[in-house]
Image (tube, rainbow, N blue to C red; front, side, top):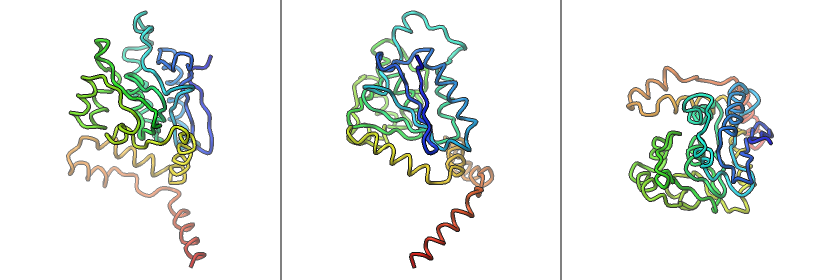
Length: 250
């Protein structure tokens, strides 16, 4: 059984976590397949302009497979899952984490690797590390505070409470929250909106934001000026197309 499927449409590659019978619980084999996809996508910037990560069946993912932990995971390298999540987060293309249903703990760490978190109203986010006497090693202690603020992150980590989609959007944990029945349609609309813009700019802007995260303002501004990629190869065509349309409408 393929644990992470890939489908491509109009420049968007959708990776679907595919263990619906286990609520897409994250085991080592699933991460191996996710890693292979991420490595390939990093080389396909000319044909893939957007990556979407979602779950099959009832939810995004119930989190790290506890049975894997109990059995003693056999990792291909130390901190393997963390490295895979970082590889996904560092893809040159924009990444959308499309979350419906459960998104707990390790799944939340995976979702937070996305540039955009797109949630259904019925999405359920939680960090439950403390329920199991665990601490995060897949990035949650760094990415959650950057999303919701340090004290809200502490509250979520201490209480292990569930945050529903609308509250997640209010807190900034999710960027969008849409009705469950409109989840797929609204996700497709968002994908089309992103893909219609310059893929060159998306890659360059993502790199700038990533490389300047945490820098003082002056250093960040200098990086933007001297390390930015400037004009893309599609700039002239885009401006010409806009001008042509403006003339026709005049």
